[in-house]
Image (spheres, each protein chain N blue to C red):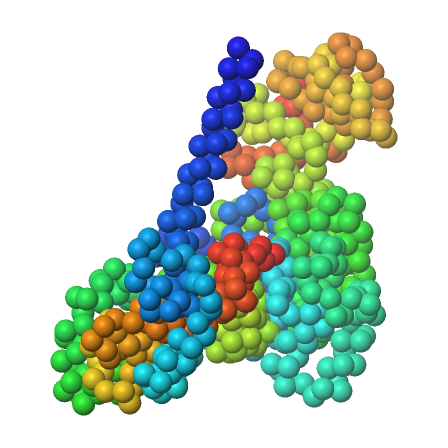
Length: 279
Length: 346
């Protein structure tokens, strides 16, 4: 009986470990393959069975990326777009979330409903009317077309609202008795209290805009304002034969900054999802 | 220093009327305590005076000036909240200074005031700490300092001691009394704890269901309750009420500490048996089984459980309440009736 239990225990542990490793492999393998391919020669990328480890690291692939497409222009565009979105969205989402959390007004359920609706309707449904609107306004092929649609971030509003709601109303009342204006209460009292949420929302929206391929593809048609994800796909079209090693090197260039950001800020992000008991 | 008056004040949330018609005078420089069970409207009253809560009808005057439409920050009122409501992202010093900066007080004056206040409440060495790194008692002090430093006309406190342990609470009570003496400002204090109210107030406002039941000094409230509610709210165990034995639904009341464990000359004497005995140290609380129900007694006389005795209550220590539960005068005629009904000496 005892040994049977022990065997069952062992099988359980093994199964547990097996599925965990399998899960990690499924997630991590494509990523690993991308990195590996970025350092292979073109021949190595074609070989069967596939090459997991390049014989010699081909740093030249990266140089090839820079030779083929204007990486600096794309990078500049991506940075301008993402930074503007992050900074401008705070102007919209902070007052909106604060009012939804701490003020009472008649239209509040309607406003909140609209915010939720904005979160629920996928971009693929709304892009056409927005495209026509921007086209009429002459905004196609401009930074504005890539920035404006994203500065009202419904997820950000929703998340920040949850945070503001957790701040005890007495703190706001104390500030009112301390003769602080509404704006001062928002900037001096409330925003510092939800700093980790603000950082997280900023990071998440930076990353999602950095990776945004669809919208940039629709709204731009020349290199002046094209962003990096579009640029990287151009690597594929530039030759008759797909040079997978160069494409993957380009992809690695696209991913690395975000990976760095995530590693630096991962603690902040995790903290933001755990309410840091204010009392 | 300021007096406060509420005139015909009404407060309703939609159709739900919390306070119907409140008239209240708070004397200049007094330590006034609003006391009552939770939901009696005491906190709402306090918040209406501060302006954090709007009033539906009526007028609020501070120093004779109508302040209905004056913003909370401009009423010259400081408040200490139950959960302290410190700004968690600011240091102790910034917490205390915030209100002064908003009042545009020059830096030198600010520094001077903060120094003085921190000296008084004993916070000088904690000025650079964050509230999260302070104990409950220390946070309480920061909240007090933040309120004091503004040198307000009125000082409001909403159950400020309820988050402290019993020992610290006792010490803070004494400190608050001293603070009131030193500042000479009008204090308005809200609590549901009758001991806090009795020990600190020089004027108690007893409230129930949005109405003021009695407003008087602690001694007056104890010795001269105007209704059964007041008589039973103050004192522990609560005042004994014997109902259903006197004509016209008159009720007889007397405090447990006025029960004598022997027969008395100028009063009534009732046969009883000791049912329970609670030893408190200096005093013992008995519950006595009688023909009129259970009577509580508080005395220093030590007797075992199950003792049969006749206890006495003197006429001077009796309260009479009418059918509407309000006090009625103790007339010679009623005294005779009581003597007959309860078997006392005339």
